[in-house]
Image (tube, rainbow, N blue to C red; front, side, top):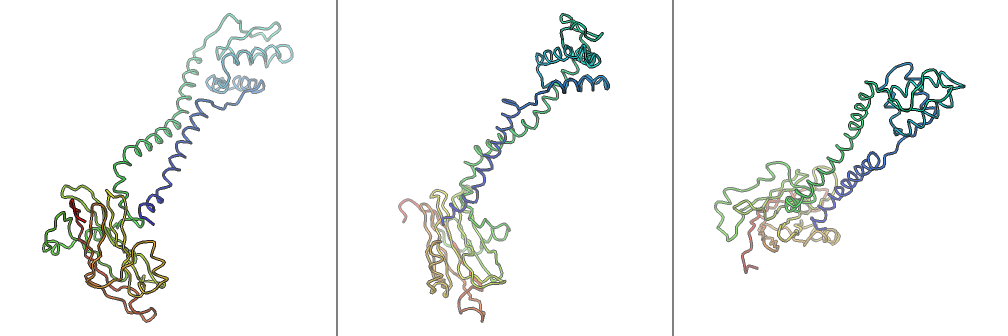
Length: 349
């Protein structure tokens, strides 16, 4: 499978995650702001609020409890309750009238109502009304903070994706499915002396050495290819492709040697196989989908080429492991490959 395809598959969770965040933000926006779901107070609820206020005298709390009703609904419901209870339950009616006065709600006086009444044309403002209104507004704004925070996070993720993805995509494409090496030694396996003595080549990008030793079970190294101005061109490298047997250390029978070209947006791979793996039809068939099979031999040079890059990878050291439990020449004790990448010049093949 092409490494770029594997890379993209590993990042397929980004789309669903972004969709989940945006969907959650929109759902909260609709549910809290555009079409909020609210609980409709009943007549009994309003009476309970009036009874509670008569004991606690907490106008702010009473205002919050009745705030789900509009001013018109509060007036209508309190007027009806006072009218219904004025004869049969005058004490309840009195508490309702007291609540209406404290919350600055005008209700129509009813004949026979309790001694305390409120004239429809006269409002008796109380200092707590302003406090209740201000508190209610503050509470409403505070309730919006979680929604605003979620929307801000979702917007930041989307903006970061729009701005950053186009900038880092070329480099992300160069990362192999197994991931780039994390230790400094694997990323700096440059041979200074060999590089100094190497003949100059047109478009030369340096000289790199990939060296494997039995026991390095997670071996996977890559080298970034850049121009003298540090312009990223691609990457090349070598990593474990196939092992045989079980247990530690891993018995590597094949490596993949690869070249990625940013301009070509593809990865060219050749499979460097042990003598045993190369001559085994089943193993050859299993690895065929990864790249072209090449028999590992000391001194042999692999040639990898893309649209604008070339790599000559020469096997400079090859030692097979000796293990009585496995066929001869089946897995590697040491394998060292020298890689010399170059940029293709106009007219070069």
